[in-house]
Length: 242
Image (cartoon, rainbow, N blue to C red; front, side):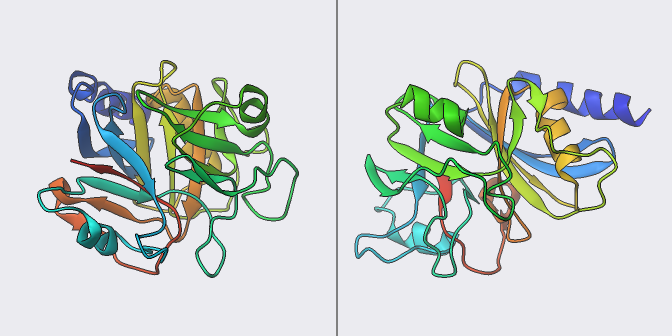
């Protein structure tokens, strides 16, 4: 019954996918999530890290204050792991300028739980690439953020995820449609395992590729839900300007 209810909740989303930015609650297999869908071809989807004075934004309010008059931030989310000074841990590009190199080797922590991946924003699309695929294809990203682990790779869960895992945290991530025309940003509202989180992207949202952004520090800005999560300052942030 829980699977059926989860599927019905997901199917109820389909008619609204044409909306440029749409944030809503989603229940799936007993877990609660907030899902924001964005159309990269019609929305100004981008990454935020530094302001005009090269200072790291760190939180949503700082981005809003920096926007030109008449512009707003209808959606934002933390978008990658960062060092204590909030510099990106992995590959990072903003407005075509690279700040960090691509990491392809295993390392401690979630970021190095290979395969990891890169979220890439181009003029009319957004895609998640597994890191070695990204290196091979070298897509021309206007914005890009590397994180890890991958949640879904070519329609399959990350091979290290365990159905009986006891490691549960608040988590957030992104999945993209095969044609790059829809980006699905998700934050869990209760602690979930990697297996549960990846299953949401694979089975409910049907994304062939999905990437974990972070856990514990996950933040969401969704004014249409009267919400802007407080908390510790973060590093890279993904958002929409309109």
